[in-house]
Amino acid sequence: MSVAHEIDRAASSQSGSELAFTTRNRQFRAGERRHWYNGDPVVTAYFNALSAMFPVGERFFCDTVRYQKHKITDPKLQGEIREFLGQEAIHSREHQAYNDRIAAQGYPMWKLERRSARMQKLARFLMPKKAQLGQTVALEHFTAVLADHLLRERETFAEHASPEEYELWMWHAVEETEHKAVAFDVLKAVTRPGTFYFLRVRSLLMATIFFNINLFLHIRNLLAVERMQWSPRAWGRLAHYLWINPGPLRKSIPAYLDWFKPSFHPWQHDNRELVAEWKAEHGEEPAHAATAA
Image (cartoon, rainbow, N blue to C red; front, top):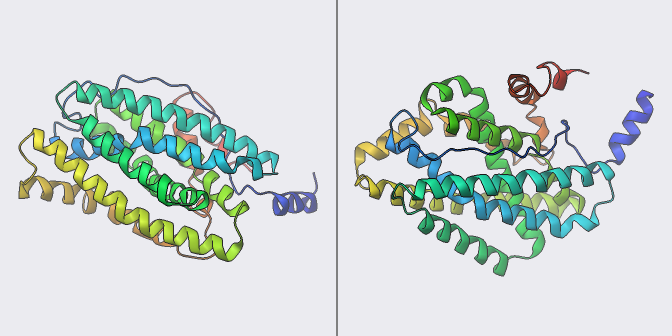
């Protein structure tokens, strides 16, 4: 195939994805162990609070993309939408099972899930369909940058996490990386350029506020079971984890801010090698395959 043909094909495509991906029907037994992150109830609560958002959140993501699917004319992006929907549906299923096991330990996961559901229901009621997709795109950016950090720090995470939780979170991080541009490309394809930039910037600012409020309330509810919800030491420990060591939020700031560049695309953060390494470890393909020309 000629270089000129490749350039023409790329220019006409609605997809900017750099990585082929598929749905994996994985099942996990994560969530059976209390304080699974190094025996630490605080960091464990952070991950469990994130998980409480996923079942309803992933269904929302699927609905917002599915609603625009008929407007997509590019077969490549259509195929990516299909795999995106498959991956997110299994994420929702597996995190629901994970949440149920945490709830069996006495944690009020139902309360956290209900709070997340109320916020999603409000978004569906108040926002037009494209604005809802904008929220999906913004939250996918969150998950992509956090997934990147988790994959880069996977050896450290493996040292502290129980094996089942390690496998669940790494699998989720890999798939969030694989499909990180799908919702973005859909929104770009169905929106005018100026409107697209305004919508995605507004969406990220809104998502930053409401995501973090929700996360704080979730963590507080989980720490209340340990009678640590107002402990300065507990919140200091969480701040240390998030901002200092290993510092996922601090290290994610540059990637987060790149969103505000008008020319930004998620695959400008090219981390295919991290996915390739995970695939090689799990027998899917050699580590060099995803970075081959």
